[in-house]
Image (cartoon, rainbow, N blue to C red; front, side):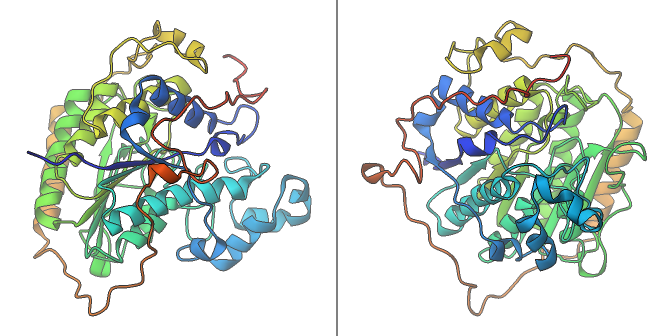
Length: 424
C-alpha cells in the first residue's frame, strides 16, 4: 500500500490584502480567491495548513545584496521623491511600484516558501504548497517583473543544505530569468523554463542557446515557445524534456513554479493551456515521488488563477474536483464568467504558431544538451549545514495567530475598493 503524501500548505490573508495600484496587472487579491475556493471544495481538510512566518532581512541577504534589502526596508510610498536615484538603481517604479506594507508582503510570501522546504528537509512533509510564492524575476540587487524578493532562490538554497542536486521547473509564460541567473554557474541546480520567447515579450531572455556557463554549462535548460501553444503540444513537450532531465540530473528535490499566466484567457498571456493541461504537468512531476515545493507565480485573470491553483492543490492531494464550483460566501460571483464552472474562461483562442517541426527541433536540441552531461554531480557532506527545525503539526495545540488546523472556517472577504480594472 502506497503511503499517503503529507501535504503542507501556506496561506496568510494579509498577503492578499496588498495592492500594487490602480490598473496594475498584479493582484495579490487572487490569493484570497484561491484560498476560499480551496475551502469551498473542502480541500483544507486534507492539508497541513500553516500561516507563513515573516522572513528577516538576514534571510533575504542569503541571496539579495544588503544595500538592496536595506533600501526595501526604508522606502515607503511617501518617501519616493527623496530617493529617485535609488529607485532607478534598484529598478523600482512602474512595474515594481512602492506600496503600503510592501516589505511585509515580501516577508510573508518568502516565509511560506522557505518554511515549506524546511518541512521537506526535515521529512515532516512530502509536498509543500505556497501559492503566494513563485516571484521568479527578482534579481540579486534589483526588483523586476512585479517581483521584489526571489523566494524561489532562497528556497532552493535551503534545499541545498540537504540535497546534492535540486531541479527548478517553471511553467509560467515568462522566462524564469531571476532563478536561472542565480544558478547559472553551478551544477547543483538545474533550471528548466518553458516560456513564450521573443524580443518583444518580457523579459526577452531564455533562448535555446542559454545553457549556463563554467560549472553550470548545460544545467540551464530553456524551452522557448511561440504564441498559442495548446495542451497536447505543451504536455508532450513537457514530459519529454522533464523525463530526460530527471533521468540525467537525478535531483533529490524539486521546485515547481506554476505561473497561471500560461493559461488560455490570461490578461497578458498568449498561450492556450487549459486547467487540465497545466495540472497534468504538476501531476507528472509529483509522480517522481521526490520532495517538492510548488508555488504560484504569474497569472492576471484572477478567476482563472484561483481555478488553476485550487485545481492543482487537488491534483497534489490526488483528488479530482467537480466541474460546478460549490457556492460559497466570498468571491463566488467572480466565477460567473464561465457559468460558475471550474473550466477556465478563455474568450479568445490564439492561433498555435508552434509547428511540429519547430517543437521537434526544440526537443532535439534540449536532448543534445542533456547528453553533454557526463554524470550527475555529487556533493560530499562531511558536515551538513545547520538546518532550522520546524515542529510537526500538533492539531491539539493550534495557535490561530501562527497557523490553521484542518477544521478551517471561511476567511473574511478581502477586496480593495479599487481592485477592479476599469473594464471589469
